[in-house]
Length: 311
Image (tube, rainbow, N blue to C red; front, side, top):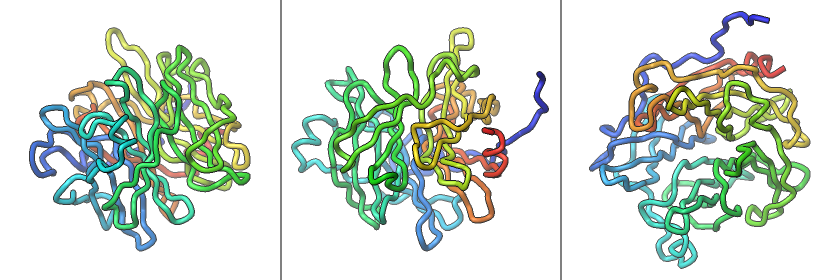
């Protein structure tokens, strides 16, 4: 049956909200940022930045309105005095796509880490202080090869939970749980790629899940093959509040796909990819997303409409 056309997501008209030119020094791209809204109403972002030599940085930017962000003078300093971190993570190459989750008043940064000279990828975890100035390395928290790790913002049934995406031939979304954020087990498949008809290549978790009365609302990504290119789009699914490995529903179509010039042209053409979504008190969902792996953008949606699309 032909569905009625409905634009669930609206792009911010002055996108992009951050570019490499907004940062000091030799930063050429900024994308795939984690974002949190603080108790005082301020927004804090950890950006993925890259320089002209493809050096990677995690760079904090601050905002009072969630739209206009000001980068700090320097990127975050890495825990180079931690021998375990230095064993597995290169100081300017191996970490990327930070996702920030606040759990019990503490901030954690899950990220992907190229290890073994970039031959595989694992999930890594930092804790960061309240001022977003000091990173503490907690270690690698997955087996190879895994990425797109997203922590839930609260314990469920006494355990921490996360979503991730193993890089096997299936490219499905999985959930697992942990007593301490370090040791993870009880893996269960949440969503199979074969069930997402607009993503024939792979799918993966995106933003940190958001608690609603109807379930955990999760903005995800999916990839399809279009001629010789891979096209990254965004979708949304709803998970059970008490069992986050249980899928309640999924929107049958992508909610945001590359259309604008800044999404179609860049170092990775035809890509929209999110690490963060913020639910505002009035029901507006703010989705922060990278476009073409080059600039950082903002889109908005109504939370009730997203939930209804999943049901």
